[in-house]
Every structure is written in structure tokens, then in C-alpha cells.
Image 1 (cartoon, rainbow, N blue to C red):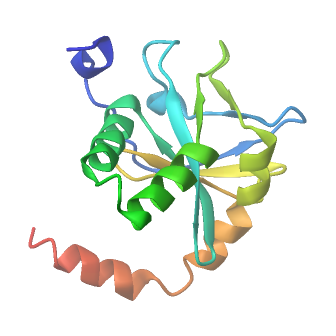
Image 2: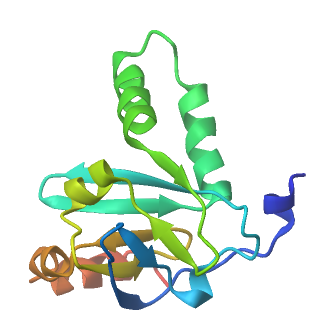
Image 3: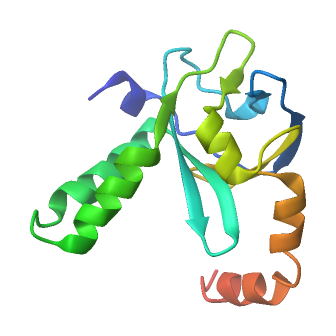
Length: 154
């Protein structure tokens, strides 16, 4: 078992707003920072419809993605496209000593990140949004969210 698999799982919950500096560095919420400064977070754009944000996966979750892709046939065109999109657009980043991610220019541009970022927890992963896009995207989603939670049969 690798060192990252032995670590307790971080639960990414809540919403946080942080400024982005001229070098595209943004502070990751302190509760969400990996215990090891060498832990890579995998960051990829999530351009589904108008939901353009960055999806951030810790090592354990990223490895699950890789395993699923490896299970797909080499002759599956959709699998090849998924690998191409994920492999060609993702970045693997570590936090600096101040707890910041330095976002690559292309990823920041795709998500519209310039001055401020909204971190949104998704339990075993998190998203980084431009705050205005996040607000606009979530208008009227309360009914959809309520139905999804109801379907969990908690």
C-alpha cells in the first residue's frame, strides 16, 4: 500500500472563497490541504455544457479514474476520447509552502478564474469555480438537489 492510501481520507465539505494573485496562485482551504507537501492533486477542466469549472481529485480518487480507464478496450473510440481529453488537459499539482495551488494558465482560462475562486466541496473531491459562474449555474437547482438527496434513501 502506498503512503497516500495509508493516510486518513479528507472529506471536502463546505464552500470557500479565496483571491487569486497575478501568478494564478490560490489558497486551498486549510482543512483540505494534504498532510504531505509532496501529495499531488490532479486538476482537470470540467466543460460539461455551461458548467465550466476545475475538478480536483486527490491521489486515491485519481487512481480510481485511471483504473476505470485501464479497464476499457483499446478499440473503444469513446474510451480513447476520454483518455485523450483527461490526459491532455489535466495537470498534477502540489501545494507550495503557503498552501497555494499555482493554476496553469490554460486551466485558469477554461474556468474563467482571474481574481477570485470559489472552492466547493464534493466529499471525496472538490471543485474550483469562478464565483459568478458558480452562482449563475446554481440558480434554481434546489429542486434538483432535493430530488437527488431524496433518491439516496437516507
